[in-house]
Length: 168
Image (cartoon, rainbow, N blue to C red; front, side):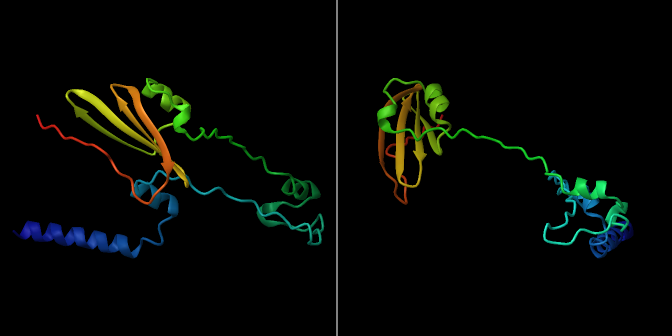
């Protein structure tokens, strides 16, 4: 009984010390201890504003830069990456033909905003819904093929017309 009390006291003391020192621990170590996989923020280099008077070449800058070559390096453009993302078109009902495979629908229009899956008489049924701010396209897919499709105005609620739950 005494050992349990001592162990509990030791744990509480360690937690208290960790709580008190939590702000003095460097951010990198805190991220490691918390298990976060976020990337550390990129360090930014101070750049003199073009409106400001350029400092003399002999004046020491932060980080030990002293010459005009270092100043010119600070004014170089920073490389950027441009990422183009192809947004699939909105699937109007007219663009989806009955009998089209589920894989073809997803390839052409991307994954649906939501889907419901159920079985009825041992047939896999899926209802896909693609939504934007004005429209909703609903697809009924049975055994991997489009059976019906409709596009209508978006509303604040979505309905599932038929869902059956089989317990086996």
